[in-house]
Amino acid sequence: MSKSSFAETFRTDRWWLEPLLVLIGLSAFIIYSTWSAWQGQYYWWSGGSEGFGGYLSPFYSPPLFIKEGIPGTPPIWHAWFGPWPDWLYDFKYLPASPAWLILIFPLSFRFTCYYYRKAYYRAFTGAPPACAVGAIPRNNYKGETGLLVIQNLHRYTMYFAIVIIFILTYDAMLSFFNDGRFGVGVGSIVLLINPILLGAYTFGCHSFRHLVGGSINCFSCSKSSRVRYKGWRFVSFLNGKHQMFAWLSLFWVGFSDVYVRLVSMGFITDLNTWGV
Ligand code: FES
Image 1 (cartoon, rainbow, N blue to C red):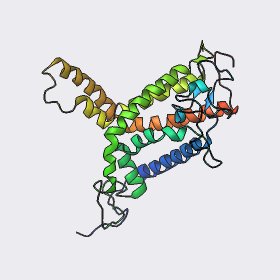
Image 2 (cartoon, rainbow, N blue to C red):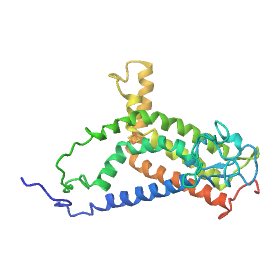
Image 3 (cartoon, rainbow, N blue to C red):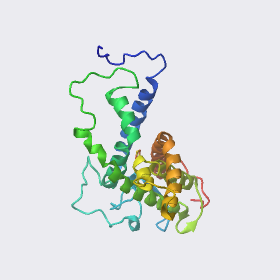
């Protein structure tokens, strides 16, 4: 049987649409998130107050260090380890942006996700671009046994992603306060939806499903295994919608950053109960 050439297929449907949308969607996110992380400013809004509360962009959370005196940055009490130290990068073309210190964790989790791997292998490498469609010919295809064996790190990056869900949940709670006063703004809703969607994506992870329900032979044999069965059923439900939550959460985390940035820059006004 002769090898098919790239994109050769008997399929008559629009098989090219999905990889094309993945290519556009992921490229747009990568370009925007890189640009945003580079800014190091306008990632916080509190209407000028220094007290408890405010909106923090998820791209910058948690801020390990904060450089003071930069517009749109949180008050120093929000930094986990204090002011920006002298030994860290702070140059004209690489400003003191705390985003670079933490983005590796959520990005490595997404990059190694089983769903995204399928999606971007198809969209970016055409290997193959879709089921029953000819791949870009390769002589030394090794799958995930060569360099890409690194994808196995996914089961470890998952733990960092879970921690980040809790941090973003704290940020969502923080967004319901301004200068210590409880209230609600459009930004509070935006930042509340963010960890919900990210949680639906993260807790539907294949590795998490194994953690909850794997390595067990009998679900009904003990009380703990019955509890795990219930957890496994729920994770399996999320897992069945993993692709949908992968895209919804990706879009929303980017949208949350855009919203906080535009409010912080004064381009739009946040509607809220604090009157700030
Ligand atoms: S498989 Fe997608 S997040 Fe783990």
